[in-house]
Length: 210
Image 1 (cartoon, rainbow, N blue to C red):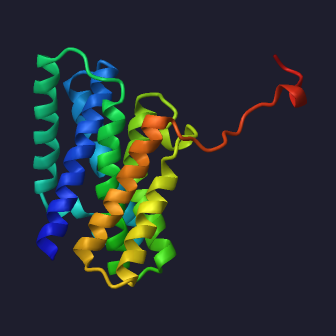
Image 2 (cartoon, rainbow, N blue to C red):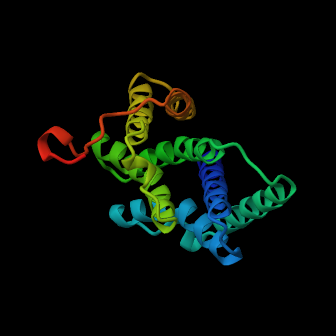
């Protein structure tokens, strides 16, 4: 089981590295900026999760994570150089795939270290959103998780599906696939149909402002 868990983790890292590279390309950053954005997007959430769980940060003793990041970033750069334009939702698409991997992996890691189901879902959500938050802040944008989109909710939903599937007797692999697919489906639906949650903002009737 540990083999496919490790590969799922590396795939999530690679996909989030692609997301960070796309964001750097959109902001016209230099090569160093690309590597920084790809790296923090890929390992930021997992690093924060491991620190809170008081366990060794996973990438510090495994260079495979950096090989996955650099390979994904380099491949993305090569493809971008061959195609000068990319669809507007490409960044969101890869971000959604990264969420699907990281949320479920983060939830399982928290369970492995004895947390409650509720805390495990929160840790999984943090694993998924923290790297993207750092990416967006470095790009001087409001993080996706704060824009009113169905973002953090999809992470909570996917983590809950994963745990419920395990409680229902599903194997770990099947539960992971169910959790990932449900999260990804809901997030892609939110992107396509612009599903949102209420946004807190100024009310002109209360503040008397135009």
